[in-house]
Length: 277
Image 1: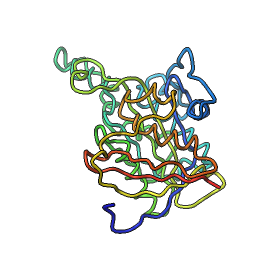
Image 2: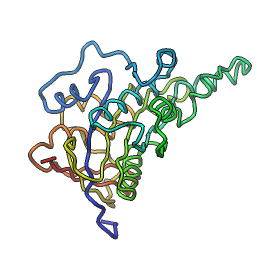
Image 3: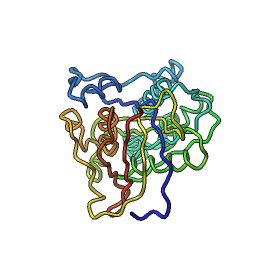
Image 4: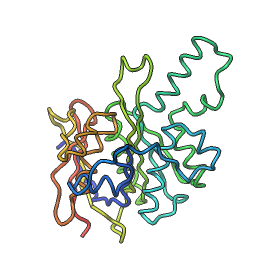
């Protein structure tokens, strides 16, 4: 271990999950436990009710995904979204809009859409969330390329422990399009969320201990344990969250296996889940 002190145990409330073949935590939890199957045909992209109808129609996939799981996590946690600080994570932001902007600037810059331009910034999703929910608490938008989920989870855990306040964690990524496919392989829609709390409540689903670990294999995400998760392995950077969400689905009654989420090629965030009971 490379830590100098033991961080406090933290608690997870309201896990949320969305991908077209597992549209919601109920479906994902059942599939990760071997008690359910993938949705066929796959679901269409979510339509988050946090947004007004006109905004909902115009919102890009990144915003729709992020707000869908964020709202689900808050409802399941029983907390008021307006009061909870948040950390939103995306490795790439909105790749589709970035491709559109680059193509338009290269061919006809005068027709660039102002709406699509303002949706291109990395904190667009968290901006929509704070406006839609009236949240005045601290918000953060995190990117660490392929290790973004671990970096965002570490940020949220440190903030929760330091401030002794719950933190909403939201992660999402979407497919690469256009020339960007030659430099990064991001496929499909995947979003996850949870509330990390400093203490146990009646909504707690699991506790976790956490630390930093130095390991020669820290840069390799854990392999999926369920057939359902295996279908999502590596589709985009948020797939690093699969091992944690599989463990949340299976942690009841006992401690789960340790999870190492890569922060870099030689450093990982180490998690040990425990049941809520």
